[in-house]
Image 1: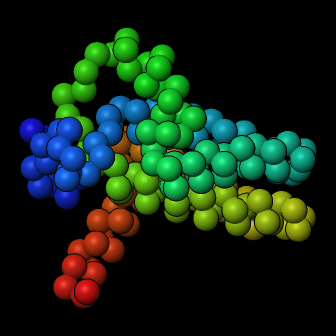
Image 2: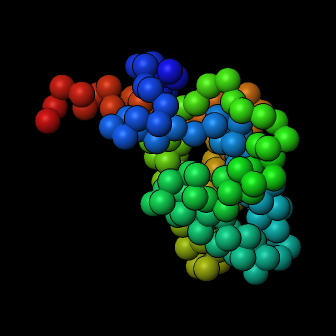
Length: 162
């Protein structure tokens, strides 16, 4: 039995339970995201078209993770196919809903950056990409997911309202 990110016990593989994911895969995805977003950030001024393509690719990855789930994102599939078999089974699993929400938050920042790049508003694009980079690096380096924490705070704040 594993615990969800809300701290409640969730039997793995239970049809009624939430989808569970390997937290190492989430950190792997955040590391790849960090590289892509950093490259986009570095190319905003000298090569806006490159930044536009990189940001667009990352926006698609965020959209897949947000709408289909983090296990279906390209980075999640790479982790499952090539990395996880070399690591072995995880010692714990996490509820997939908070990271899926985090992908939606990342998508918002990527879309803001895309619109800003298309409108030639480099400063706005730089700020949006910088926020996305900080969030991805926090997750990749220390395992702190800002979007996941936002999800949990929103859930707690709205728990009494329904």
